[in-house]
Image (cartoon, rainbow, N blue to C red; front, top):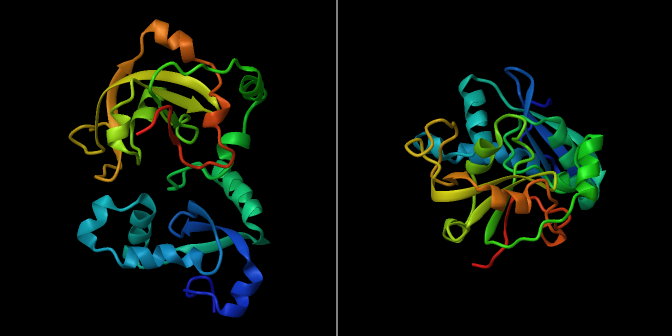
Length: 251
């Protein structure tokens, strides 16, 4: 019995594992494409989900399912690695977040619990996080955390595409604030929100009918001066929160 043929753990193994943190690896290039935390047979559920989805639905699959399908079409199997086991839930969340920081190219939608609070920062970022003046939110804003994508694209491109959110609620926003490690790094005025389709966002990949993006413009200097390089208020920094989207107003 080896890693390539196991599809589930027996009960006596599950009992010993407790919570664990795992990685899914593409055997074609050795790349880690997903990091997760779970217990029981959670590590194998991604394969089972991908098997239950029809090929003609593939354009709307989450990226990890697309990757799994591509691997299987090559006649190969996903490599499953349990990185740490025998953990409690809180410790597993911290390790998951650390691995997501170490493997930034994964298909995970969000960066993991605690990654926004205590993830990797240089000395200047640490100083800014804890010494920057807190922003006073004076408008209806959507706050979007772009920690995991800011190194790949400019701020506007990072913040505007593509998110799972309540689009009716988002359309009430006067501005969108781009957040990096607790600091506001961009302020944009959304002109319209659209489904993340190629017809609206041709310059991006990963189009889907399950997410949204916005088309907008940079806020004027007066608005920028209210928010840029300021720290988001504590009420928007719920410890351990993994959702990158927050609103300053109700529904």
